[in-house]
Length: 324
Image 1: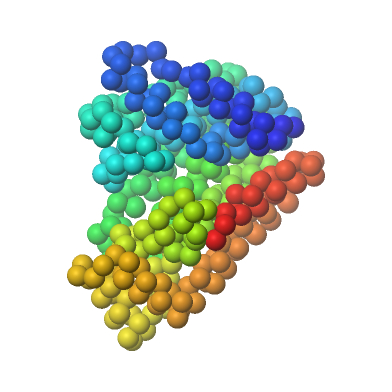
Image 2: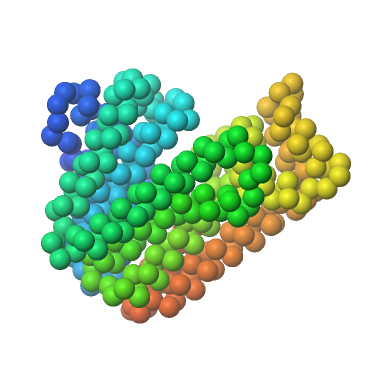
């Protein structure tokens, strides 16, 4: 079995060589630009690892890994349009580098090209893979719409939020693992357990992202601390605080969310102070730990050699080991 780093290098070489054979350049170039932005390629590499875990060859899973990465990046182009974002991974977003129409079209094209990649899989695997891929692709769209709806919804609950991040973030990670397992020859039960492992790992990872936005180190996190607070973004931390806050704390917190007269730094500092009083840091850590441990429980149930379990376990710890 190859290591994560080895498969990462193999996949990066594949994606670097990829270019859709389309015209004109203003349709083709945004695709190459987007895929060239980098990133850890966690989903496609986990897919390749899953294929090898069940005795398959990573080469047979490359088309599926390409499909996952191309589709994922298509959603990022469209997300950036909806968010009116100017930067993605410290580079200009596609709709700013080109224009809105080219960004929409190139994102659409990438979805088509993802299916083109899936068509290169062994014929006896295509139907099973398509069933999973179609489901998670639709769920990602559902998650994004929930996220957009939450911006104007004052009644979002913690269960609503966890449903949203499961759809928007976790299912693509989980589905990547399940597709890899299918290509590798896993039976239905093991493929399902690997999916559940990925789903809970994805939830823990997203909760950690929320956590680091408030309690992380700017240098190691790679983002500005308190950005979610400044934007009034509904995260696990904020929703948990609103759920727990009573009396003066609740009034102060809701007042801060609607206060545009104070500076951004003052708002962040004040909200963090309330989080500290309510114990939000430890409560979020507990929630992250709960989903991480649940992921490992599913991993332990999978009928594979211990060396493969150890590899996935160590990788999981590494993914959850971002500095705070």
